[in-house]
Image (cartoon, rainbow, N blue to C red; front, side, top):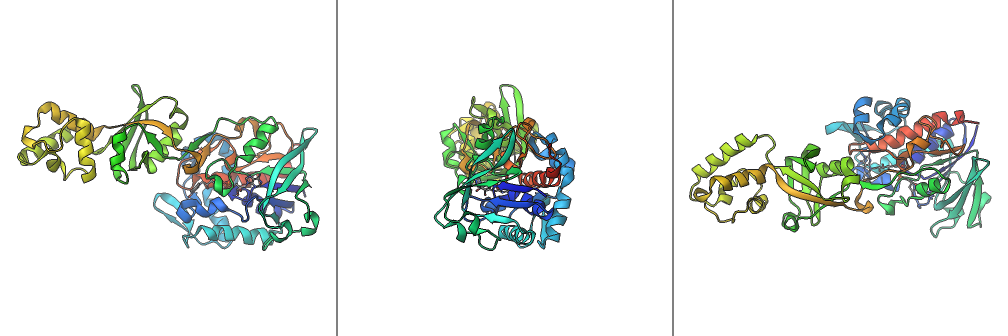
Length: 437
Ligand SMILES: Cc1cc2nc3c(=O)[nH]c(=O)nc-3n(C[C@H](O)[C@H](O)[C@H](O)COP(=O)(O)OP(=O)(O)OC[C@H]3O[C@@H](n4cnc5c(N)ncnc54)[C@H](O)[C@@H]3O)c2cc1C
């Protein structure tokens, strides 16, 4: 049995706390917010896409950075085992399009509630409104956590339904909790209002543990072209987004995207931000939207010829109307250098080629990522080179573990990021007793 302090009552921290308490450890879970799982609550648009019911290999393909580091964590708790575990804890689940798994109720709160019940049953001590201020290390080993009361509520009235030894700390604004192991599950930097204040990264840096450069990821992208502002709110389906640096193709995917007041967003764009993040903003990247990816250039050209021949006296914009979303028409003609009222029968071959190019390669320039406040996850974090992939213990500090988004691990959308939190927590819980002495 170990005395363990877990910092952060989010996805990773709650999972680790339940499993470690069930294994007979004496666990204290510290959360700086007034409640557990604030970020979990907003996941999946309030429905919590808690995993993806895919194979382990498919899962690893969806992890953008350091997928191989997750091999053993995933074998400890893969998506299928996670769904079974949640069902055994009383959560009814369902799998939707793209194998995205949700609670059957479509309510993220039910996942949080499940954890609250499990924490209570397992006898975990939960301290809310308590911020870990620092980790004490002696002779190369973590020996406990300095805690500061956060929020206005007095400490001994914030334990809610959980067991809490108010006597132990009542009255003190700051106190020390000794521990044989400390688990940092403090998350990354995105959506700060949920409690992701970057403290876990700070603790690592303070203790000489390398943190790789961080970026907002799964985030909208700012574009240079002012003219796109007119398209704000327009969403495109079944288009292909292609990004190049010079002649080198960096990204090509099909799906949905959306124009915003600053540039572009939507699933395709979030995916591009995850794949290209660190490159965006360093220098402008040339992007193109293929508005008709199912047609080759030749097929598209034949269609244009036919459209213009069938509608010789209509404007080019009217002639193209059956082919493109109406709000897209002026932008396509502008990109092709044509006036919107140009008659179809007056369009020259060169102009037709320019229209073709605007439809197949509608131009954009990516200049920057939007900020952490709009990012689903943080790319970068505690370097996995500094962490044991089974125990999640830092190689430089005995008894100090890092799990969840605080690590340099990030994935695409679809439930994969939460699965990273659950799997790293489960592996840490299983192996924490086997840490180096
Ligand atoms: C809008 C949005 C939607 C998302 N939807 C999905 C989805 O549907 N599916 C999916 O897989 N992923 C989704 N994600 C990503 C997912 O939520 C995160 O990857 C996941 O929550 C990370 O879990 P974590 O436990 O590592 O960190 P967090 O969930 O961020 O938890 C960290 C906790 O630590 C606490 N903390 C921080 N510092 C301290 C401190 N010093 N002392 C005490 N407590 C502290 C914080 O208050 C917080 O509660 C979404 C993210 C966002 C922002």
